Amino acid sequence: MKTSTDRILTTHVGSLPRPNDLVALLHLKDRGEAYDQAEFDRCVAQSVDAVVARQVAIGIDLVSDGEMSKISYATYLKDRLNGFDGTATENRAAADLIEFIDYARRLVEQGGTERSLQGPACDGPLSVRDEAPLQKDLANFQAAVAAHGPREGFLTASSPGVVSVFLQNQYYPDDDAYLDALAGILKQEYEAIAASGAVLQLDCPDLAMGRHIVHRKRSNAEFRKVAARHIEVLNAATADIPPEAMRIHLCWGNYQGPHNHDIPVSEILDLVYGARPHAIALEGANPRHEHEWEVFDEHPLPDGKVVIPGVIDSTSNFIEHPKLVAQRIGRYASKVGRERVIAGSDCGFATFAERPAVDPQIAWAKLAALVEGAAIASDELW
Image (tube, rainbow, N blue to C red; front, side):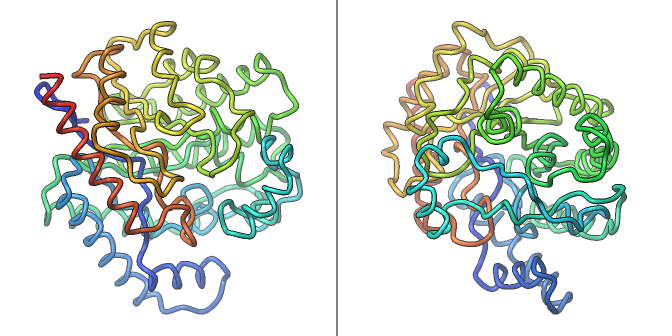
């Protein structure tokens, strides 16, 4: 994974707005309706090329494929693996939305959060159904990177833990058995991404968001045991990938909600340090977590790690002033050192394919502000 000794590099969390024609095809596929596979493949390949080109054009250093082929970062696996033909039944509504239920209803109606209770569930043994979608993703991204020459590319993949959050277990005897089965399957995807030359980003909202969704009735101490187990499984699944080829992303839920039940990062960061990936991406721009740059006084960043703080919010249509972006970068640099900070976003700008919270054109303007702010911070820090 690329770092810099003379300026602040820029990146984001992964998902980016998808073109309308691709969104329509993704929904046909997701609903199991008829669609033209050749047209879908063409549209995805074209979209990946365009989104990489646009990232490079505005100055993003570490780019992704925008998750163009995926309906969402967590549930895409139901189309690639056998065993997800069930329907979720457990109520996993977020604690903050339960507390403010009228707002929660409005948020769902507006498309600001997923109607996850009717989502898929694991109802049978897991196995790989189709390797073609992953291979197509790798080929599309390799071609786009070769064509447009970014400093570096990364691809996202769900952690075993976050799959267990979104795709409920109705088959395996307990959570441990389900996590082990997921890790055994996902290990193949992780290694294929790393072997392709892309940095592997492991999406791990389970380590933060999981606290106020699945484990909202547990204490923080009890949740820490769950998080530790998720990290243990993740480390086993990535044991053959060098830490420098990976980054991990923490998330408290990419929705514009109260977030007053979010677990503080200080309660989990020591555990996250035990995960193998070299870089840690975490929220740092939204009003609930912006203050947490101070956590590195309590939990110093270990040698060999870098941090990717969110310095632009992924749920607000405010475009951050570049000077504010630079200030946020400077705070982290003051705690961990300028060469160990990469400027990023809180979360993805299109976590689910339909109706992202941030208008697509505004999302790109926010990323441009990120680049401009990183340049200001670089001038100040160097």
